[in-house]
Each structure stands twice: as structure tokens, then as C-alpha cells.
Length: 315
Image (cartoon, rainbow, N blue to C red; front, side, top):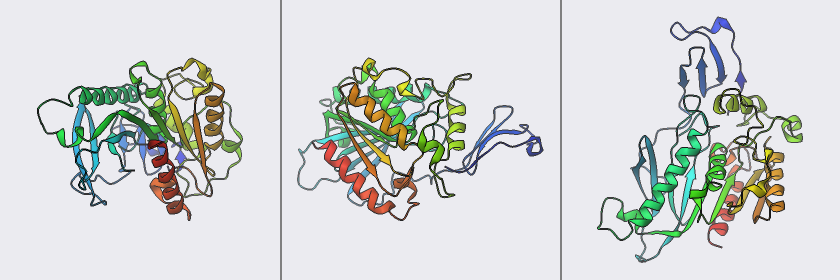
């Protein structure tokens, strides 16, 4: 999401020293640890929605963690229960904050909160969902409008880019048992050895993720001293057979994404582990096309992606 650059000592900040890591137009990290984030996306209040048939409200799910709840407006089907999609946004763990109920969750960001903080927060969100399930029959309160429409037997966990990585690691945790499926959109995985797509796919200025940007995100997100073969970065560093709890998966791969080979290798490993995985590759678009709309085919491919997600959830 922007070109990476390492700055020299001429770029000193009067208060914090030189900038030691920067992803252009997104994040600067200074020598003393100070972090400066530029607004990656607009801060939109829950009272505004581009979809008039959707109700949206904010909720606190744990200390310091907020979520935005979405629900289609009722159309004469008051008893209709909807699948619940728990969604984590992308942003390299460092920036950002389909006819179903949706919970869009926040999480703590690196480098102030390195991994596994985001995974722990994802698990806290899932625990909150289970708490809502347990309270389904309580007296009406401020969340009844949303809770009463959720089919807690059909909970899916999803995310794009770094959010997909969170979804994967949360789904593999024991407390996540019962999640019906995971939807991983361009999952942000890495590894010490470069794949063909990382080495050879040309990335234009409109690309959301270059190899240098990816490396920078991992330096900021992983524990200090860890390399990209850490299991939190590279899920294939150990056999997926060990992750016996993994649910069925839909993996959305972008043809022009430098992560495309890693995403497809992950799908192959899932199949070898005996897991049900549906792999869909979207031609002519790169990383985060569905968010940035930075390719000619973005709109058509986004509609196509939503169709696959809808079919996966309602299968």
C-alpha cells in the first residue's frame, strides 16, 4: 500500500530522531519508537452508509476493542435468522482500522502492539460473539436488534490481507471450535524464501503491495528478532495437518498479486491436510483491488468475489 523507503539521518524529526521505517503515505516509525500514521481510509461514522437497506451501529466488544455491526433491514421477515460474518480489515497489521449479519472488528496495531496482539484481539472478538449467543434469550437490550437476527450456528470468520491472516490464526485456535468456515481474501502470508510471483510479478505504482512494502510490514509486526518463517507469518512453516481444527475455507487469490503463489501454495497444503478448500483466482487485478478499485476490472471482479462469498456462506 505505497512504496517502501528507508530514510537516512537527514530526515530527522526534532522530537523523535530519524525515521527508520516508512511506508509512503501510510506510516512512519521514528528511531525513538514514535509512530505516525496517515489516514489510510476515511473515518466514517456508523450513521452513514452507502446502502440504505443496511442498519449499522458501533459496539464495544472488549477493553479497547470496538466493532461495527451491520444488519439488512427487515422486509417482512422478522423471524429470519442470518449467518454471521466476523470480518477483520487489512492493512499489514499496521494501518486501517452478502445477505448476512456482519461484525467488522478492530484490533491493536503494530509496531506498538506486535503479533500476537492482533490474533489475541481476534479471539476476544470471537469470545464476545459466543457471549452474545449465550445471551440470546435475555431481556431486550441495546444489542437485541442485531443479536436476535444472528444464526450463531452459522458463524464465518473472514478478512482481507492482514485481516485474512488474523482470520486464519483465530480459526486455528481451540476456542474457535464451531466456526463453520473461513473466508480468506488475499491472505497476507510470507516466508524467508521468495516465491516466483514475489520475484517476477511487476508491480505498478497503483499496486497496493510491493515486495519491499510487504517486508516492511513484517518487520514491524513480527516479534523483534523473528524472521518471515515464523509461523505467524508463514503458516506452511509447519504441516497444516497439525491444525486439525481448521474449518472449510474459501480463498480468494488475485492474479497480479505478489502473494498469489503463496496463496495457492496454502490452498494446496490445505487439500493435502484433508481440508475442504475452495480456491478462486480473479484475473487482471492485484492486491486489495476490491478496496482500492485501482484496476480496470476492479468493479467486475468485486461483484464476482461477492458472488462466491455469498455462495460459500449459503451453501
